[in-house]
Image (cartoon, rainbow, N blue to C red; front, side, top):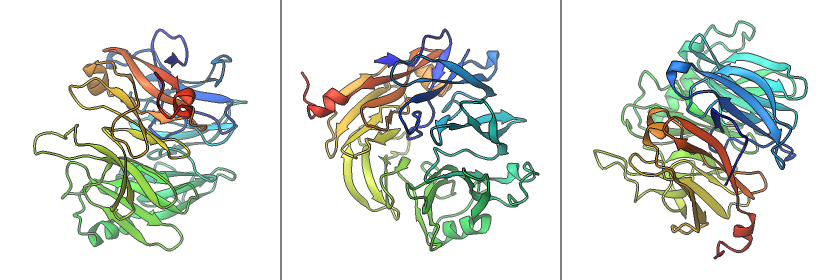
Length: 367
């Protein structure tokens, strides 16, 4: 296990499935936070470094953000990163040139997404963001929007009524937070967009919505599987969890693959919460981020529920739950590394990774 840098405070990767590597494999982006506790504020620095040597460490920007997912920093191409800042209690999205330090786009007030796909960066607008972007009159109602990275143009792909119609059409009951969508993600070809929906009749897990951007067809999964990511252009990978009336069960959770309408196609791995899949989709990783347990990272061969490797696993419940530092395991672009947040005590965490190339090449059978 290696840490991204030596730093007396905390270091943080972003969301699971949000890629910390540049597409060419040259750079890593991460956050440095002097303290995770509220008494020291929310100052967070955006840093990059060389992926292979961990040298050429360079600070790019300073933001204000909470601990959960850090600044959600990820590369949109080889030369630009996207991250979130907080201003006046609202999230501001910025896209920055790593070479010049210039903010190319932003601040754009809205809810950030996991990552860019195929030249587009998706984000959502809920009630509190209306009238916060006077430079973008095209942002004129709640919904889902796409930012074209090459031009800075913004287009809306779903408005508030579209979202409410898809919810009611699926038999779900909208609530006051239904249009406050999170985990907005484009599929790899940017032809479909998914989002997490808060609905009244699914209070524990919520619902998972999907819109086909070419046809306008919509899909909803009530009581959705959690921490979903696109498996490919047409299906999801996510953790199916069960609620026993008092708590979400850990032992019965499984990493599985689903259609956009919720049919389970296959089991990909065993216990998990935040998850990711290798680029070739032959290996899957999930964390045991359940209250009361060490937050182990489990690596699974596709289709097997017994892990071939376990790492991480520090048992610092305050750091994981009260301070909201979740492991968020994520494969590298070449599938040879797994990145994850690793608490080292109750008030400090480190952005770490493990090299798994040798293990995977041996089929998960190293002694």
